[in-house]
Image (cartoon, rainbow, N blue to C red; front, side, top):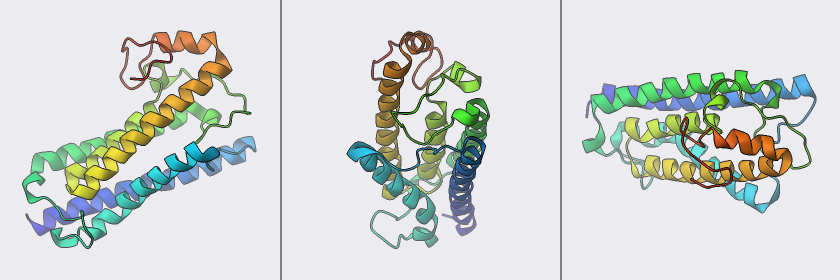
Length: 213
């Protein structure tokens, strides 16, 4: 594989991680200043602690893989680049997913406004957001996040990259189900109606509120 092509892929993966998580930090501070309330960035209970541990692995792998895979030979087991999966078309797809995923994330931030939170606080009242992408799917911010994480194995294909994607998918699926359970209890029929015409991940999918897809 060409060293310059691999260097470009590494730069894109690291840049995407740095920009994305710096953006999350900025968003959390902005909302806290606006509302004076916590953005629920600390896990509550053992279930959320496990989820946060999973996300910590994903974030760490996302940031570290460009360095661990320097030269194509990993500095740790699982970080070796798989040459057969390095291809210009996959690079183009990976870059497109990164760009679309981050643009979509910013769209979600605008749509949610001051209602944006990182975690669930079951004692906190909230309103149902149906603006922007939330008019089509219930968890667009997770969908766009998955798109960005899915770009990692396309740009730096390795066992570690695929493991990060798998763990991330498990985390977002669990988190989405937990949030839906909370909102069904909190909002009742309005949320049931919202579920009736939106999909969890894809627009206009036929679903029943409470069903796990």
